[in-house]
Image (cartoon, rainbow, N blue to C red; front, side, top):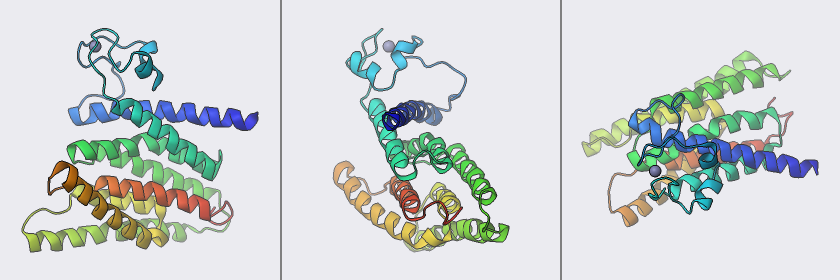
Length: 260
Ligand SMILES: [Zn+2]
């Protein structure tokens, strides 16, 4: 019964975080404030009521249309809410309701927003990358405080030096590629995301992150060329999916005593 209650709570949290993520995805590229204003229908400007804002269910009940002006609301919004709930559920399965899980829950809306904004606009907005960085640093403080074994130097070496190394590799390869191809080949947003991934994953995971994101990028580039017929493709989705995957793998491999 308690287990059922936990799962239910995690799903609800995941849907709410997903709903917050859709607001970020809509508002940040349009330079709208993402905290204060109430949600409105973007077509008829009617303020949305509580009933219109229930993740997934509002969309299903209104058959994917605005209740006021009947314009279609993209399926991408409920889809993101479902993805968010699914990721939260997997995080819960790996970590349980340990503090570690809550740091990841807190980062999920921003990580998903980065993924979907990069897919659509080919940018990784600084403010979102920065928030994921800050949550990562707070998590490091937590790891340091709750460990009897870790010294501050270990944290600095594993995570901060690690993060600089993460960022240096794409920066260097980007520079070389840009000089060889005579065109911009890797966005600086991607380099910043590498740094953030280093803060979360630490030095040990660098080779895995490079391999999985590189592999992911090749597959993604082919799909992008096939479906969109464009050369330039966003690197963010491959980075973000590898990042989430490795974070879960890390949680799966290292149980509490190992790195706390
Ligand atoms: Zn409307």
